[in-house]
Image (cartoon, rainbow, N blue to C red; front, side):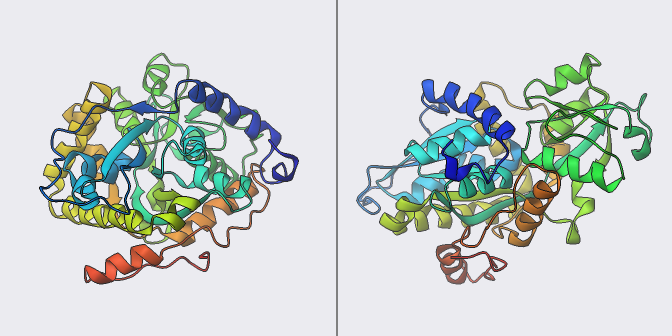
Amino acid sequence: MPANHSAMVRRGIAALAALPLLTLAACGYGSQSKNDDTAKVAAGAKKTDGLDSVKIGYFGNLTHGTALVGRQQGYFQKELGATKASYATFNAGPSEIEALNSGSIDIGWIGPSPAINGYTKSNGNALKIIGGSASGGVKLVVNPKKIKSLQDVKGKKIATPQLGNTQDVAFLNWIAGQGWNVDAQSGKGDVTVVRTDNKTTPDVYASGSVDGAWVPEPTASKLVAKGGKVLLDESSLWPDKKFVITNIIVRQDFLKQHPKAVEAVLKASVETNKWINANPDQAKAAANKQLADDSGKGLPANVLDPAWKSIQFTDDPLAATLDTEAQHAVKAGLLHKPNLKGIYDLTILNKVLKAEGESTVSDAGLGS
């Protein structure tokens, strides 16, 4: 990492983050999903901004439900006209940021911590957050035989997805709030924090190697299906029970050169969220169908149903909570105090919301 970036993130995180980046770089960053059957281009449709395609990235998580449903229902393709909506799926934030920086994707759905890290590491030159997508959907799930109360978490082994990721930061902040001490880098202390990929966490939990996990959906509900108990829903820790879990980001040069394409994607996102909230059961089924198309396997009802209920889909990026999450990372020693001024550009989103008769949203003073 260049010397002028090193002040932003501790060397340990940078070194860890580099490993998945290098691996994914070798295989083209993310998985290219199969062609859409539902997203037909309307007859006579024209290209948007003269582009052949717009490349969209997202995770195979229900917290990225706007992207899943919007793709499955054809909203993105409809708004882009004859410009092809192409997609790539990711398993980790650093790999998606690398793909955005390299031009392998143009727009992406992503969590707050990688968005903050991507912005600060580039000295504010790489990306902009241009919209919100989801709130909630994060839980502390534990083995009820070993942990019966929040105080019982002390002395136990608890999994988080990745060092410095959004849930890792939230859990470390919660631990500090209990008056307990944990070394953020090693995860050792009054609680042992075990960084474990979401895909393997259910099996690691079932083996008894960890006593619980602070994880997003659907991993949390997968643990419940294996006998775990929800001890804490992170939304209970936030004002109005809302906090950002997924944002929409764009490469800055793409935003400058192709504002009409960005507007088309944001309009599709707003329309998708409106449809999700009006048709929750149909939307849940659509999201699961897209998960199955992407990975070859959907979620069983006992995982899908509780997971979907815990996520709120919103166009509001909940900017004030992103700033709070950044402060939590600083407090944990995972991030030097960042300058987030300019991380948001909600101009196009608010234009779309006004046209739809919806209320505009705030950047909490962190706009361009």
